[in-house]
Image 1 (cartoon, rainbow, N blue to C red):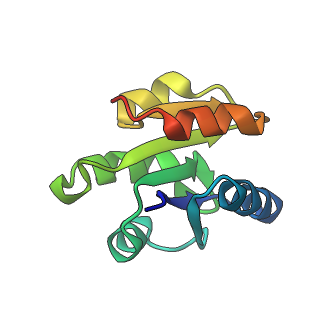
Image 2 (image 1 turned 90 degrees about the vertical axis):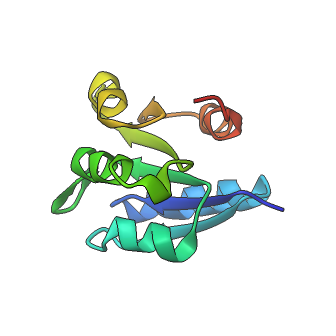
Length: 118
């Protein structure tokens, strides 16, 4: 069974590239609209991994990750956050499992997705 990855990203080119990469690597990828309710999409899609940008249009990825971590039904969800700014410490403190700085190489992302350690 392939791992499901939900992409929450505001750059449409990045979404296309991620979909292509993940599909080639055997993942099932879907993306959420930048202004959508990410928590509702997680409940609907039930991904194994949420790949989320820190800056999502009008929403803050940091606020979203914190609210997700306050919900017991999302306890097993692995959250990988990304940004063009080095916000690693903020992301990890708010509840992300991992952070990757943009621009990143595809191999870096794939290693993070394969790493199931918490």
